[in-house]
Structure formats: structure tokens, C-alpha cells
Amino acid sequence: MNIDSIKNGYVIDHIKAGNAMKIYQILNLNRLDCQVAIITNAKSKKTGTKDIIKIDKNIDIDLETLGFIDHNITVNIVKDDKIVEKRKLDLPETVVNVARCNNPRCITSIEKYLDHIFVLTDKENEIYRCKYCEMSLKNKD
Amino acid sequence: MKHLIDIKDLSVEEIDDLIEVAKDIINHKEKYSHKCDGKKLATLFFEPSTRTRLSFEAAMMELGGNVIGFSEASSSSVAKGETVSDTIRVVGCYSDIIAMRHPKEGAPYVASIKSEVPIINAGDGGHNHPTQTLTDLLTIKCEKGRLDNLNIGLCGDLKFGRTVHSLITAMSRYKNIKFFLISPDELSLPEYIKRDVLEKNNIEYVETKNIEQYMKDLDILYMTRVQKERFFNEEDYVRLKDYYILNKLKLKKAKKDLCIMHPLPRVNEISTDVDDDPRACYFKQARYGKYIRMALILKLLEVK
Ligand SMILES: [Zn+2]
Image (cartoon, rainbow over all chains, first blue to last red; front, side):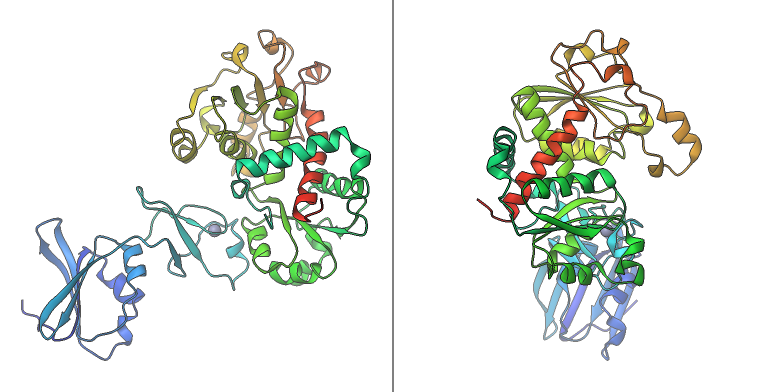
């Protein structure tokens, strides 16, 4: 399968297989006017299969949000047909309005104007807790 | 310290400082009776808790201050749909300090973000209740003379009991503490507290279903109530509520200077035949609660 290589933009690589559409939506890639290629179930030496997203434009990518979703993702920055930088992602200390708190006893369940804020409380086990009620985010999906 | 939302916000030094002030209040009550003349405490209880509210109000009155507020949400503007943030900003115009209880977890934190006056969390759902923990610490300090080198038994609902979780967190910062966790499997201490608090701080602990097994080793026995509202089905509640009842007989092997505590109200976890035992500290504990709240109000109002 051939996908046009990109001139200037990004190759978001090593996405956990099946997560590409979610990232497409969270990063609002549907609003772009450039070419965006989504490749699912590509072969990966490390994990067997992976997803890849190619964006043919220099846009602002929210690396913190991306790191929160999956910090194993690599972001390759492409300039003039060449990969000029490979960015590894970190787990961000806090994320705002990316995930929602599902605790029915949390203040965010009744006060709708509040931002949904999650704080990294345990880096080793990748545990995020709600800033308000401290409920852990079990499943980032 | 501007607000008190979570016991974890306080350093060991700040807690020690509050305990020292509380002890001084106990010993020299007259010295403090006009410290808050002309000041107002607002008690905003979005859910009723008569005991906690009265403790705060008595504390402010004993400092010479006044009290305004409401005792349930149905009689307040909340019933009309006002946000916590708005209520707090308005009440802040009428008062110098606010003690707030709310059924939703994190509400006092939300309140503190926009508040001009100090906020004290007087309980937010099953989440935090820092003045209960301060009360427990003052009780232990006054009754045992120390906060380190203690064998602490915690009995009853260790799963949902927030007072237990906060006490474990607070006591884990002192040296040579050992916990004895006494509960049925269904109500045992959550894994994340064992991992994030006990194991992380290398705190020794044992789990048992038998209240008498370690009785002879305990310096403190903290009893808790099994709360109906924490259960999803009636059957589980009925089955577990009477699992542990402390009575005179079970205390046979206990140390002479054991300190029996309970956050109150009790249902039947402690038989009334224990009440006259000199080791029963739970009513004294309520009194200590008032003194530590007096110390906290002074601290937050920066009254010397
Ligand atoms: Zn929450």
C-alpha cells in the first residue's frame, strides 16, 4: 500500500493499534484542510501492530494531550521530505478537559462550568486523579 | 495556610503547631475568650451534620466571635440553583471565615479557588473531613502524650470510612507506627491506600478479621460505623453492620492505658457497657474536636 509521503508536517508513529481514530478526533484533525492519512494495523517490530497518522501541514499539535493518551507515541517532524526531529512524549503533570470525571459524587457532576482537571499522582503506574474528588482515572479510553 | 481543604495540605509542623495551640486553649481558656471579638464565622452546611456544625459554632463562640449560616441546602440559595462559587463569594462579604460541608466531593476546593476569606472543609461527601482528623490527632496526643511509637487498631468499615483513610495518611508521617486493620473482607482497606500510603512509607501493618486477636498489643483502638448510605444493597449492609461490636468482654486482654476512639455518632459498634470504662475516649474526643477547631480558626484568621 502506498501513501503519499509528506513534505512538511508530522508523522505520528507507534500509536497503539486501534487508537488512531480517537487521536484524530481529540486533536481535531477533521478540521484541517490538508491531507491526513490514517494507517491502521501497520506492522510494528516492537508491538506487532500499530497505527500511524500522517499530517501534511505544520500545525500546532497538543503534545501534552497526546502524551496523556499514550506516551509511547513518537512524533516525527518532517521538513522538506525529511524527518528532522523525533519527539518522545512525556506524561503531562496535568490535563484539562481531555478526560471527564465519572464519579457521580464529584462536584463536576453538578457544576457544569468547571474544567475537568486530572493530575498525575503516580508516574510509575501512570495514575491520574481528579483534581476535585481525587478519584483515579481507571481507563483513559 | 489560607484554607484547610485536605489534611495533606498541612505539614507535620503545622499540625504540631495547631495541637500546641489547642493544648494551650485547654489549659488557659480565659486567655482566649475574646480573641475573635467582632469576627463572624459562617457555617454553610449544604448537607446536614448537626454535630460538626455545633462543634464549629461552639468553637467560634468560645473565642468571642459570632456565627451565621444555614444547616441544610433546601433553605438556601442552592435550592434555587446558585453555584458553590457564587454562594461563597456572597457569604464572604458577610463573614470573616467559612466552614463548609457539601455532599459533593471537591466542592470546598472549588469554593476556595474564588474565596476572599479562609475556607474550612467541614466534610465533602465521602472524600475529606480534615477537622475530624485533627480532632483524632489532638485526642491521641492528649491521651497518649505522643504521636509516634503507637500500635493503632482500626476496626469496622475500612473500605468506605474516610476518617480511617485520613487518619492512616496523617499518622503515617510519624515514627514507629504500626496499624492493625480489623475488618471483614468486604470492608477491608482499599489496595491503593495500602500501596500509596502504607507500603510507600514502609509502615508495618497486619490485617485480621478477629477483633480480639491483637487486642493485647493495641495502644489505640479506633472504632468506626458501618454507614448504610455507602452500600448499594440493603442485604450487604444488614449482614455487615453488626460484624464487630466492642464490649467489655472483648476488652479483657487490652492494655490498661488503651485509648478507645470513635468519630461518633455510633449505632451499636460500641456497647454501652464500655462507656464508663476509663479507656473510653470517644466523648472526650468530641470535646477535643471543639478545641482543635478553635485553634484552627485562630490560625486561619491570623489572630495571635
Ligand atoms: Zn472528580
